[in-house]
Image (tube, rainbow, N blue to C red; front, top):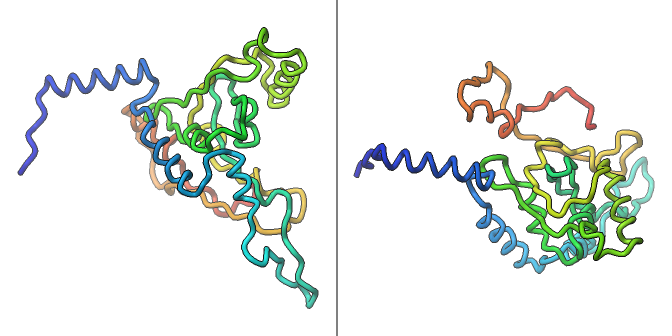
Length: 238
């Protein structure tokens, strides 16, 4: 059966709801279903905390990892400290900080090792306007009267190390990390030394074969959401 055309009153009400969501919540979708879904998937793997995630990453396959022999030499075991590293990038728009999780989780949570990794993923996937920014409240060090002088100094120094010199905020908002770092392969690839193992990066995008229309709001927003394909001849990863 063909769908009935929407009445003008219904269309107007929907349009007003969109405006209200953008104005009041800074996004159309709260992202709660995504957060519950990714948390459920991680819980099925017994990964309900950052500590559990790190422990899982430290597990090696039976027999371990070994480098391929070169020039007839012997094989050597491959187990660098960075093997367990996970890097989830989110944009902290409150302090304009490029947040890399889980290594920067201590800036935002009092007990980072107990924080569910689903929160990190939810912070990173908040596409502007489509999803509400992910909010984290009660930032460590934001209540000086409840924080020891030594702890407060440590928190302030940690923020300064990441380029933020202002007062520690009480809460922050996160949006998609691609706004600040759309292809963060440099987090894993060291261009200043010979890597022990190859680094592979895949960036999905569209070829730039035509001029991008910019007459409507969605057309203007498009390049932020669907980035162009990278230059395949480029060798720079920074």
